Image 1 (cartoon, rainbow, N blue to C red):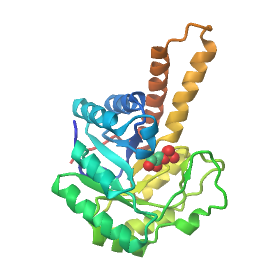
Image 2 (cartoon, helix red, strand yellow; image 1 turned 180 degrees about the horizontal axis):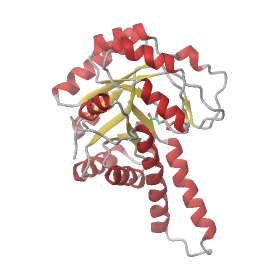
Image 3 (cartoon, rainbow, N blue to C red; image 1 turned 180 degrees about the vertical axis):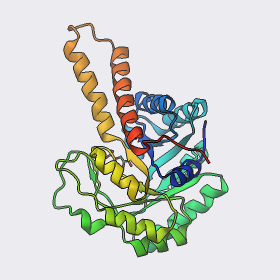
Image 4 (cartoon, rainbow, N blue to C red; image 1 turned 30 degrees about the vertical axis):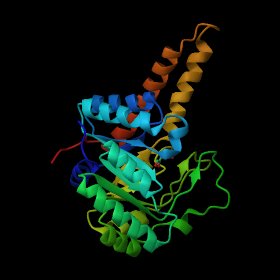
Length: 288
Ligand code: 13P
């Protein structure tokens, strides 16, 4: 069933677990997440990121995602990930998304706060939820970190409290050591940052981006420290790719059908999503 993200995250906060925000860049990745959610009875957030328009146009993805959410047996929020402009957020809200992220993390604090607050007023008037970001994480899709030092970008607890107060957001993405994309070296998460931001912002659900490629202990520790939403994409996409490569390697030349490729990718992504859902909520989900 299609729900707004705040409902899902409020339940996660009271139950002390986290839910996944899984990005959909193909029909297969969306189906995989819905099937995993139904198999485990876990709510989740089905996300579209504008960076994936090169694979799946938003105008095609939006009705598909909304229909999958409406038909799902579990609560599913449909969310715009990393909306880099007010226009993107309005486009998603006009399409029926139940949640949007305005990502002003690269803007000066006051501009990020003022624009996020304006997006939040519109979204709330439409019954939708809003995520924003303070502190920033690089996009690292080829695994090259350059001279990036995560600690230079950590979210500052006092600024987070001020930001939440000024904007009225429903969830806040924070920077504490994760990056988007491939990790060439194991990430070091600063759980002190998570705990300090949690203490400074009250019960507000905190979001971990760059959530794939972490150890089981990283997920457990992040959730125990206050993370309530984990954004996940790259390593699920790699799991789908590996399954397709294996299938191609064991299929005689000339007899690999694309429908079998799609099934292999969907099944592998689904298994990976289920693994993550279990780690984020070992006791399952609870509804208020
Ligand atoms: P990964 O692709 O690193 O899992 O990050 C996903 C994400 O944070 C989307 O916002």
